[in-house]
Image (cartoon, rainbow, N blue to C red):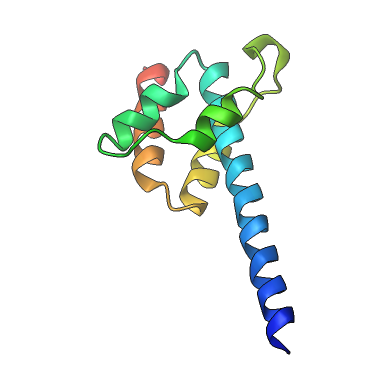
Length: 102
């Protein structure tokens, strides 16, 4: 494989990851909206020292009101967050799920 092919493959891998990450953020954000929660508030609770997440702000613009959305199962959002290594956020989401179930 020549250097140009390697660079193109690396570029494609990065683009795929970014697209997948945006989908994860969309699933998380829409789940929050569907459950009457604020996505950015929960994110900041999980990651209080992180700077503003620009991608989340962009993705939030593509969410829909809860009454226009398909249901997103709790386990789905937890799995997607953990798949991307967002264990702290998954922990916060789990806390809210348990609070709601009581």
